[in-house]
Length: 437
Image 1 (spheres, one colour):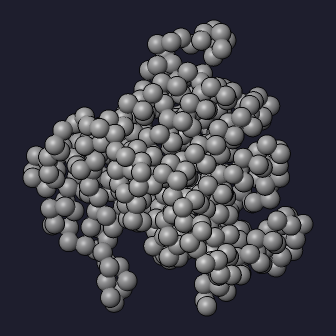
Image 2: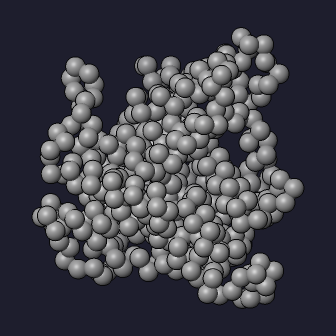
Image 3: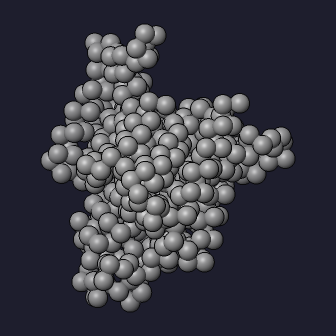
């Protein structure tokens, strides 16, 4: 083990890597409870999604640790699960089983483009400014969902949305959780989001707003309600031209967000750990293959897209330098499957602060957009603002990708537009045309 993970080369040891693996797990353990709650809104069985979340995270992280040998953990991604539930299933009206097939297909495509080494071409085709805008827009969308779940933002017939009842006990609990989580995060407490959820849930049980669980440790929930559902519905579907276009957009969005989220996360964490040399990431192909494989496996198990987590940086900060830290994190995800009885105490009020804080972190990419250039600012702004206002990640991406070629052409910068962007321009025009039918 020492030789395989090269402990001496990276000046680390078993204890240091174990602490790093535990730190990463605590930093991202919130996904075990947030993901099932989000996907249950799409009609999926919460217990099955809990198990699928833990298994996909464990399997993906093991592959990353053993094959790529990086201290980077994977799990179903925030933003992608929101896109799955609120845009694809509730918005477009695609059944969750078919949406899982879309996730599986995006994972397979990801595997192919990784094996054939064309990821650099795809990365270069999409302007960096639109990547930043997409990440920020997803952050605002997630935060908006969190504010709704907290009862801070509620529907209104005259103004679409308005301020909710801030004296409601449930809303007060959610706001308390947000304050606690913010304090922990500002103080730099590792696993602040997770601990914030624990404290909020405890406060809810003490005040009687949340019922007590029957136990802490229990049996692992069955995967039966979701396992293999990505295939079961294919023979029952009537494939109309509109559905085919919708599925194309769904798959492209899953692929786009996962691809660039993974690339950005891998580079950021690897650079922090000192792996990047001459602006190149060693074993990048293996890392991307681990991510795409995890996405495909997760879709079969019954969860939305699995991706690399930026929370892995907390483990690197704790000294993690090898894939053994990932193995430790994966083992903890497997162990966590026996704590399913705690799902009952993780209500929307408990997860709302986590969604808002994650949204804030994702929205930080706004600072990287060149707002002083209107040809960039306009498509970027439409991408960002359309996601929460239309309740659709796909719509935000579509608007940005449509306006970018137009504004760049008007500015006389046609040479800076990759041919792929023209293809996507017509794809998204067709998307809106079919939505209008």
